[in-house]
Image 1 (tube, rainbow, N blue to C red):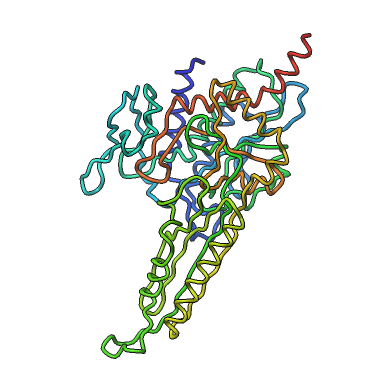
Image 2: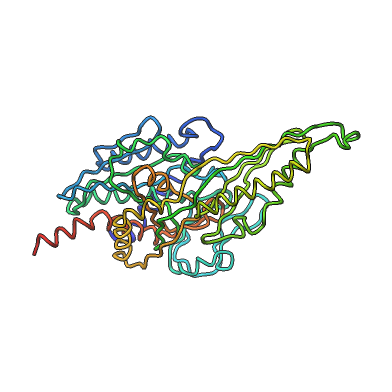
Length: 423
């Protein structure tokens, strides 16, 4: 297939997958957290079978696993992973992907907001676009996220599987494909049976801009704060009322402005409160704590503890409870013990004609948990940006390059062995 044919296949698949609403639900008690993810899992399984993958299945937790057997003497087992859900931070309903072909700079009109305002991208509000002149850019249509995080990863891996089936002359080791639910809510591998996957190492297709590869993530905890107040008539409230909403708001507003996601970058950590609900007698906030350094993560949690202590003294009538829960840890600790996994990835990116940029993930991937479970798993770009909102976009040209990187990884060692045997 030509590059254009691969791009066409990538868009065709991504469009089909994005049109299925697979928003995950952090409040759900089921696994996966939403039934719509099961719908996408069944579609992926059907397509795998139609393309000729003989060993593929969905387990009882909706993990899709496909095994493409080796056709050479390379006995490695490589897993490639993408997730099926989209983030609950913005609507995933009625997604309508559209292509803006051959971007020439200037404004890309995505659509209009519910109040009629134009939603658009340009090189002022998204400077990264300037590096994608001439690319085919895909966006949603204004009132939803796109879902390229991570349906681009799904599309790349499904196209890769089809390519291997159609080209048996390409020598490769055992290939494992894993499609997970609920990654966006930190539960992507909660129920995974690694023995069933049966891989030596892996790569997630869950990154951003072309050439970016990632071998470290945040250390991540969740945080919840509950304020149990006292509701009385406002006319007789002096020294009697404890307004939970006000107390909780003061705790949140006391958090330093230089430790928020909107004021940090690179290796900077933050706490973000993403939900508040309540009334005078009871209020609750939930959020996330993120830091690449575990020591600094604990420092931030201690700082929040001190803020809460001050409010407890200021409002003795109220009862304040809070809790931190571990979500995942920085995978660099594990990946550094397996340097060959990164060496292979770096070479694959260079062989695709790109200069790899190794950077930390300002977030997490399934690879974080998988690495600590015993499967070292760095992250590969897919070519998108501005995930989790209406300004999300992805370059089809970058997706095609990610496809090439995956193909290079699969056949890399086999090619080296073939060259040696020819001498």
